Length: 439
Image 1 (tube, helix red, strand yellow):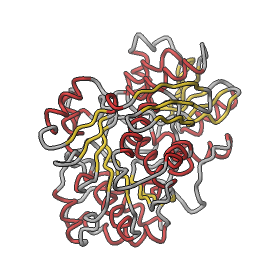
Image 2 (cartoon, one colour; image 1 turned 120 degrees about the vertical axis):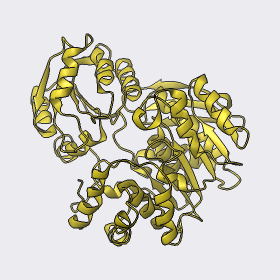
Image 3 (cartoon, one colour; image 1 turned 90 degrees about the vertical axis):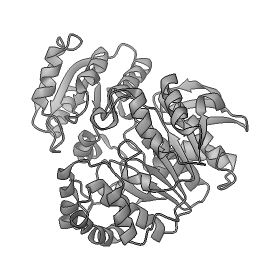
């Protein structure tokens, strides 16, 4: 991959987030509107949208459809954001698209995410995908991906995150997320609280069909181990028994949401029950879904998770307590400066033996000294020791030498900087090619 192109593209991130559809509309119009003929499933939510997007892509891949998948952020290489049938966009396809769309950053003051979204849509159109799964970047209503007219929309778990853009209450955040549900189309709403349901129905039910997953499925987790979960899900169409290596009650909800979505698209995209079951089982390999409660070593345990807001950290902490009774962990933790990391570390306090706090290269990352101050100032964490490190690699070296249970959590960008070391020292099955790079 040409480093100069990626540096120019990533350089656009310095201009930050600028919600709105005007710029992406102009960019795509200048390019012949490649998104117009895409059959897209559009997904928004605070937590679970990446998992649901990957589950759906895996299911349709298993059914032999040509499937596009657009998610963010990436872990190690930019190419991961844009996939067809689980394979990241190759450099030879990506480079000319970056060259084509970069000038729009000056012409229309387009943001990094807007350029990336346009690239994804053109790549999918050029590749004649049968269906594509598109995850929002931030919010929904004014997210660049909302330029598409999807065949169905999905809202996953809504909680607090990016409040400075989306609002200070769940109802305000739900309003932004519900903006992806189009008139005369179905909106699938995953498990949420009653205030979220009420707000979405208030906004959309006059013009759209709102389907609550909670009302459409019954089921339970039948068993769970460190590496596998068995679950039963019953809908009004069928009874399914699934095996998955996505663990926890939140993944049960994500799988149930995916099943309801697939069932509501059977007329347009028929699939067999076997494809549905196999797609869920093979999601990590079919869609390249990494960093969701992955156990890289059993003794002592070494876990990685991309949870990066209070609700996702809470879910991960609860799952750790369930699977590792009374175990205390060295926690390698980092966070973006705009996240509520004080609340995140309070959830982690109940399982923490110590916090290992590295600085990250990414400009949005909070300095480890400020996270340390939050630990000292919280009654839940002030008695827990912490150590500051210049880099994530030094924190990893420390914990590998200490032979303690270790959890890496708090940010996609933390995992990104550790990826080569995790592959080298813990044999993480993360596929990268030698010429891939991240910035």
